[in-house]
Amino acid sequence: MGLLFLGCQGRAPDGLALVGATLIDGTGGPPLPDAAVVIRHGRVESVGSRAAFELPQRTSQVDLSGRWIIPGLIDVHAHVTPAVAWAPSRYLAWGVTTVRDVHGGLNSVIAFRRRANSDVGHSPRVYAAGAMIDGLPATYPDAIGVNGENDARKAVDRLVSAGVDFIKIYTHIDGPLLRAIIDEARTFNVGVAGHLGMTDAIAAAKAGITSIEHLTGVPEAISRERSSLIAAHYRGFFPGWTSFARSWAELDAGALTELANRLAQEKVTLVPTLVLHETLSRLNEPALLRDPMLKDVPQEAQRDWDVPGMVTRARWTDAEFGAFQKSRSMQDLFVRAFAAAGGRIATGTDAPNQLLVPGYSEHREMELLVGAGLTSREALRAATRNAAVLLGVDSLGLLAPGKVADLIVLTKDPLMDIRNTRSIEAVMSRGRLLDTDSIRASW
Ligand SMILES: [Zn+2]
Figure 1 (spheres, rainbow, N blue to C red):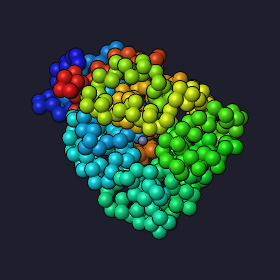
Figure 2 (cartoon, rainbow, N blue to C red):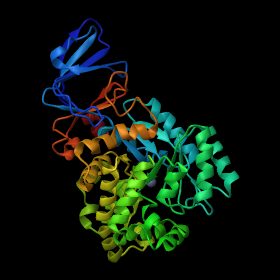
Figure 3 (cartoon, rainbow, N blue to C red):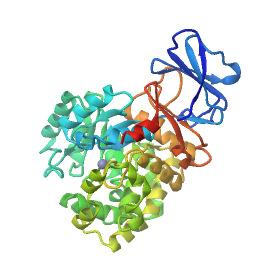
Figure 4 (cartoon, rainbow, N blue to C red):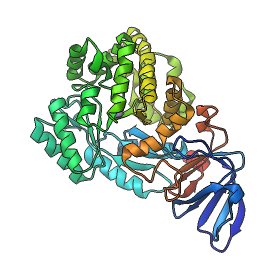
């Protein structure tokens, strides 16, 4: 990090003026060139152009000419638990200043969140679902399996009492259970995120679900194979995912576009996790296992991933990977149509699951969203303001007076090429400038 401080106005500075950069504020609006952004007490105090700027009292100034400032990034589909205690510093070094945990076991995640949220400079801010709610039999042993609508409401009550920020539901939740969960969650003003299986995307959206993860429930809404897809979800994660991921290639483009339009009207947020789809469709490619970015993941964690073991358990052959890859263009078509219809998309990654590097995967997700047809501005908004709107937190994902001072300083223009979000010179988390070089040196 080579930021040049230019002195200070007044004694004992408690503020910092970032002057001269092009500001991309997260709204998706046009960038502000030659900006002056003042940060004080962890918040953005003012935003304006340099021409009209006068350095306030007690404020240091740093020259950011030739740089770009974007809000801190938000990954709304992560799994943070004490078992991956190495992950938070990776997120921060990559400029991901907020993550939404979508399942990691109830008590462990709540404890993790408490630590993370008081550990400024070492961890992103964490919003947590704790344990997800599933139908019976629960797909994962640390999920809360519910038997009937009363039980489902009690599970929501228990999670809210434990302090979760939102509810996550899993593949065995059917329509009646989903409606009960959403109704109960609404009384506590918490949202519901869904990895769908028994329920299709349009039914879930009409029931009032807040976000749909991984584009689940989309093929189920329009495929002629609907009943066999639902049966596969019932059998378990791998059979369900395999049938779902294969099924896209056979979908009708017109029906998919029409469904995208209807879903956009329902105001549901999509968390496509294209980086997960892309990764799982290429697990048979040696280049993927040798991605240089994997250097950010400790050897032990890479061993825990056991990619060959997972492929064996899933019974994925080259034929499956070929089918998954054929599906990718239809997923892109759907994402493009949903965005064109005004639908809200937010970035999620599923990190740190197999081969999904915490932090870096967020940048890959933005790149894949642009590959699907979004503009760079839209991809940035998906990773900032849209993600904050999904979290229901107005102070995040936007660089405007009063908002939290989470931001990234870039040396290259991310609107020219979305991959330039990786040209990170400095990260500010909750008003504190972090030295990403020394974070990396500590790994
Ligand atoms: Zn996940």
